[in-house]
Image 1 (cartoon, rainbow over the protein chains, first blue to last red):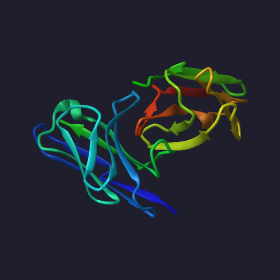
Image 2: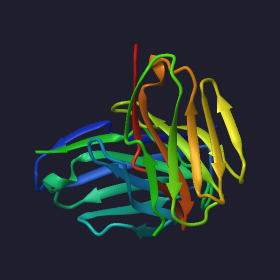
Image 3: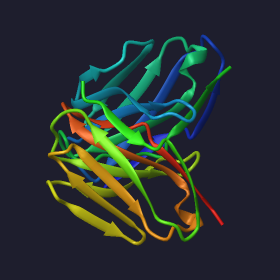
Image 4: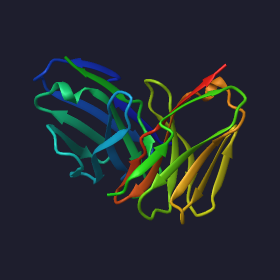
Length: 112
Length: 109
């Protein structure tokens, strides 16, 4: 069966520090991968999605970036965090375009 | 851009009561999903609705899809406290899912 791992679960970082969140999927090949952000008490905002290695599409301009160095690995990064980057970050995968998405456990990021 | 609206945003209901959450979306889509999110947790898939008229039921929850009206409903029957959570609908668009704003459900004993 397929599983998705996301870490760390919780992170507190100072403003201006770098960020790296990692997500890996097991049990499937060539998944679509997604990064979402959820502000406190709000809905989900799609940040990036990827349909293959090295293929990244950005939905929202910001100081975040994403990379997919391997088929089942998706990384969310920032060179310098802002206070507004605080939130709950969720990685997700699906088997294709317009199919059901399955979510990782999430990373709660607090920028102080 | 595809827009997905849910209502109500907040719902407080007593145990044993019935209620319906609505999900409207702005453009044609033939797939709709319902997710549940407990506080501080990730999203759990509840239902996948793949065609007009689709109805799925699991326990006290029943979801339906009307693609002509661009409407999905999530009906809660005889609510219990364990159903307290935030419920999201999501609609497929170009290369991703568009999520509704969520409905925060609180079931009061």
